[in-house]
Image (cartoon, rainbow, N blue to C red; front, side, top):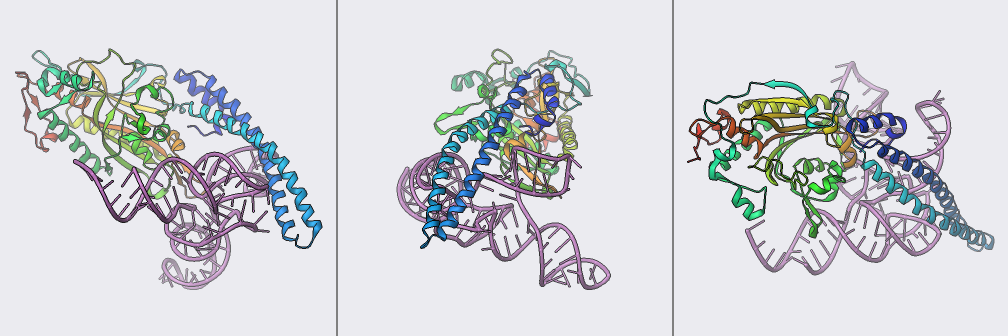
Length: 431
RNA sequence: GGAGGGGUGGCUGAGUGGUUGAAAGCGGCGGUCUCGAAAACCGUUAUGGGGCGCGAGUUCCAUCGGGGGUUCGAAUCCCCCCUCCUCCGCCA
């Protein structure tokens, strides 16, 4: 959520953000109109309440003086009648005010974050600006296999769909162990950088999703619901990590608070029908290690670059070829003011594909979550929140298998993972 | 699932219908003292919103887990929900 004052003081900023994101500008008009309405009602209600409160207090005073004083008692009675009249008017206006506030809140929830000046224009993935390229496209003196071919029966999508439907799979044997080594390596790396590992809830209340900006809106189609318990399955541990400090007033000295979430993630992938259906590139369920930071607003851009540098450190140490892109305005999620993606080269697809995503949501989530800190002087302010992917059991595994494949179909294991109980090679599993 | 007891300011914790937005303590901030620090002492210290003001500010409203209700008036009484704790049952 944006600072409500912003739509009054600098509506042009909000309008520009909507324009750059390719969203209808009447979202701002709705917020402005409902804000005017709600403020005018608020004033009238406040005035009536002030009058009522004063009268009530006078009744109290009159009643205390009323012992044996018929005049005071009569006065109290008269005031009582007056307050009753006030109350009827108040009831009517309060109803209008409640409706106006609800309309305003809905309009505010519908506004996306501002867009940072350094974000490139454009609406699609292709409009992203390439910032850096690491390494070069790997070449193979043999016919390249994709991850499904390489993993053989250890990635079993047929049985996965029999059990759970399309886009579900079994990761088995050494592929499962590869994920465990990768996730442990990733977590250890993050712990080394000061992150606290967290195994968070994956079923959350609606308010956690509202707070992180996944709801309301398009997210409604993307998120699994468990209606019997009014719970939702998270698409990323970001949701539960962000909600960790929901409604809290944090100490400035404790910032930044950095967590790494280790969890299963669930995505309905509605609307992506037919795309990326092969293998585990886009599945309904996968495992992920995620970074999350609650940060002093003064330092969030620095933090954003730092999170990216950790993603790069991990990706590099895994021997992957990648490029870093600055995602275009229209391709940002509503909460993000800026987003870096690492796009890894997948030999099996012979193209760059999104591997990680790192966003600064500035105060957008913090406002919705009610997560603030008290600055050295002045009143509490929302913190800034940031998130970034560290590793996944889907795309990182694909990149590892495909990048490090050898002619016989075996996989060379990066040195950093060999410390986690893996040999120098896996497989071949193709026989 | 059953029974009982709680949720009050940054924290601990008083308060059971009328200047209680809320005692006290802790913490924070400012000061006195000190070469400096500690201790002690003094003062100060909730959040959100509306109006007015260029501004320091000022004024009004709301808020004692959340939502409804009773009442002229609710932290205080009633109802629903959330949540924490204890015990019983069941179970990984």
